[in-house]
Image (cartoon, rainbow, N blue to C red; front, side, top):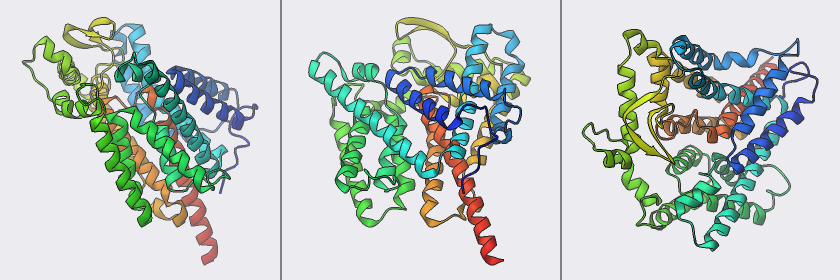
Length: 417
């Protein structure tokens, strides 16, 4: 059952505006200009304020995240305004993206939204493969330089891969077996070329949740493909520290905290050193700061200057570990609110009362939430702008699950009556 959106927002055709923003999101992912999407989503919500009968029901789902934002504002007066605004932007960004996803579920049918995400992911994969091939022919770029120019990848390709392989994309093109196989292969190749531990972790998470829903032949194909990907990734440019194999070997060192590390070791194991610095910054606060944080704009003191990209930094506004980022800005209470939010979105048993053909919605939602939890450790995944489609889909599929559950419960009640 699709909810009627007639009184939701402003007079402009909201469905068209949503499509435009999704297209801009895809364009932003390709051009590595993710702030473009956020700008238009902010514009969308500002315009919605002019509608007297606007709906407020979506905001109740993100109350824990809004509470986190208020916590960050409490001690923000002690920090520089530009740093405060930066953190405010990063904390409100997930709220707007998730609400945007919730609204998409009202304006697009489930199949329509799945088709959009599938072909957006396919287009991104095609762009990535073509760009990678073009740069490889020039033979003047390293693997890491190519990733820097093209982009680190996008979870939308993983979503597209699983929608196609599970045959959830119901359109005239994906019904043709040869085309669907081609689309699956293009997404698979792009995922390999991402050469990313984070996206490989996401791929495995989706694999583990989707695996139980597949017939035997697809299970065999997925296991074979996964083994092939692992073998291939560990052999590409194997002697480089930036290769997938080198990254995997260095994973433990990156998350191991060594107080006595010298500057060279700190540079090579920067994320671990950065986490240690964030803990020290957190512990430098008062007892109240432990609970509600040191506010937006608080910088993490590395104690020494470290070369990051083209500049040297001692005080940094962001850290790779998203949990440390929350802890410094909003304290233990912020961490609690974050997990309350994820717990609220995780499918409970009452949301399993939906038709068998729609059980994959629950599978997708679980995969997205676990991906959020794990990527937040290494790339600040929940606040990372490149994860925009993850958060949009998180909101959308949560709402689709509620809609399907309400529809199925209502239908069952009518039949019993």
